Structures are given as C-alpha cells and as structure tokens.
Amino acid sequence: MAKKVFPEAMQRLFDRVYVCRKCAHKIKADYAKVRAGKVKCRHCGSRALRPKRREKKA
Image (cartoon, rainbow, N blue to C red; front, side, top):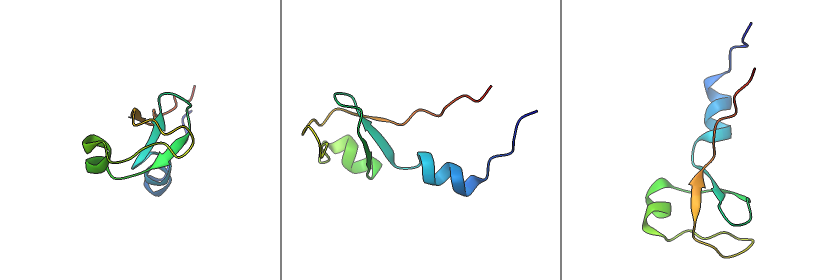
C-alpha cells in the first residue's frame, strides 16, 4: 500500500533542486540559470549539475 505524498512536500524536495555531478552536494537554483551555466557548486566550484532524482519507494 503506497502512501500519498503531499504536493507541497514533493515541490520542496525536488523542485529547483540540483545535485553536483562531481561532489554530490545539493543546490537550489533556477532552471534557466543552471542551463545558462551561471550556477556553480559552492563546495567544489563545478558547473556540472543535474536535477535531483526522485527516490522510488518500495
């Protein structure tokens, strides 16, 4: 039986959240700025970011 997830929680956890491909730190940023390369990781300085993946609950 799957639990219902609140849309507010999904938005807080996954909307505008990006993960550094180099050091795996999470960053909140706008999609347009990430695509333009204006956002970099605060920890390692890399500009290679990916969206946070949604976790599968079994």
